[in-house]
Length: 360
Picture: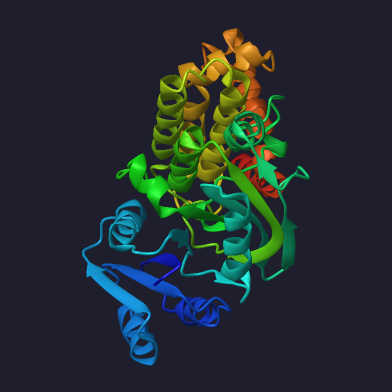
């Protein structure tokens, strides 16, 4: 019998896939099934999966057309037969004792969901990311106040310190729990889909536990959706926010989480503005600034900022005057600073160079 089903959504990751699969096949817990969902890859990812399947019969390959990571993970859930379900992204890797230890922890506390810590790895080195409370077991109130609340955002409206911990790959879920509440990822959501899944799951969860080991290695890959220019990022982020509001409203937690939702909205706006001014955006500087202004003029963002008493947007209605345009640029830079201070500095230099060339 398989104790754990490990779901891996695969799309064009030939560069990293072998490392990922090797780390899973090396698990000290042997009673696992590895469900690889090939989501219409156009590189050699499928061939790599088939190579490893010949070496180890625990690998199940599902080859399907490209429909996005949410549908791919849902397909994996549908095929899963283990008592528990875990998720691994194909460009990451895991420590060999991850699932043995997490299985021991979740069984010990008889919980529906177990969490672990992780390492954020890049070419510059590694940073250990830990849950900021020293508990092994969490009841319903702790789940709401510690887990859900911190996944949504922080109470102080400071996007710089916004703490994201909603990733599914740091979790182990009881499969009966997932099926009982018909938990699935939301199709059409292309970023932060795991955050939405986890918030929904935790609302139904009465008992959760934490294994304080650092088992998962998250690779900060610059080609991922949050590290490259994305023309639809703002629309996608607003979709995420609206879905979170809907979930919390259904659970009657919407007002309780208001400050945290506001914090998230500001952080998302900062992220989206940074995306528009991102150096890999090939659009002209004028067009990039217009796109950033469009985000900052968002009515909901104005409401959130006024509620937070951070900025007063009333004086920014007429953008034609030089003084008001300057004020708006300050707001853009303030928002962007919380996301990427280095980008602001580089962008200032570029703007200065553009002005100097015009004067000539």
